[in-house]
View 1 (cartoon, rainbow, N blue to C red):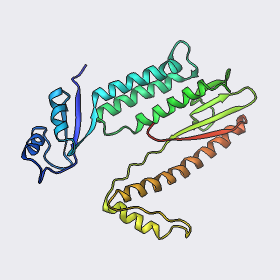
View 2 (tube, rainbow, N blue to C red):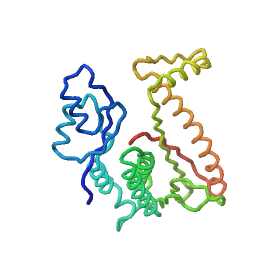
View 3 (cartoon, rainbow, N blue to C red):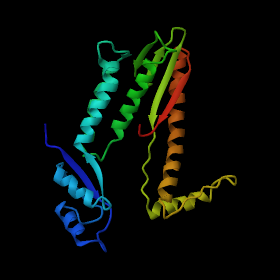
View 4 (cartoon, rainbow, N blue to C red):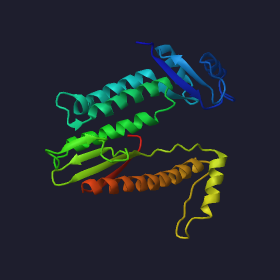
Amino acid sequence: MPPATITVEQTGSPIRRPGYQRQILKGLNLNRIGRIAELSDTPATRGQLIKVKHLVRVLYATCDLDAFVEEATAEYKAILVGAGAKVLRGAVLWSQFESAVKIYHASHGKDDSRLIEVVNEMAMAKILANDPALPNARIEYEPDMLPDGRKIDFVVDRGKDNLYVEVKTVRPQTKATREAYQKFEQRKKHHPSNVEFVVNPQKQGGAIYGDVFASRSHFLDYTMSFEERLAAAKAIRPGPGILVFCGSG
């Protein structure tokens, strides 16, 4: 197993702070706002980080990922690929999880988007598998159902009809910049008269509005896409559809 590492970013300045804090930052290969360093995850490193915790943030730690994978394995693996697996093609979803873990690890914690998406889908698989209203239902992950090759995350055969379930992750991450707040001021002019959106530019106002705006856009796009696939699926076999929106888990 490779040695444990921790990736940190400097977020604050040591100016007007005790001199030892600047020296610690230099020792951690930082000493510039926005600089990122990958360090050995040792008690000594953790101790130094604690002393400048107001000036840095931890982006990624391999030990955290290892713990997360262990928790996900205990929570979902048996349902997907165990001897008593309850989801057909669950192995496909589990394989996607393992691939997403590798991507996240290779990015040193910078790209967790695919990992979060897959975990949200696994969580839905467990919900469906344990739903008392679906005791003998046949649950299949991304079956080859639509003639054009498009997929629906879960198709549940309830006997009399199908239940179609789509899981989408919406977690925009707008940065709190001057440009983000300027976009808010521009878009605010086009708000309906009965809408009053109040944010403070000094308290991540641009980021808050940007996330809300992006989320609503994603909701619309995902809904329209699912409605098209749902109509095609219902033409093959009738049944209701559920669109589930998730965040960071």
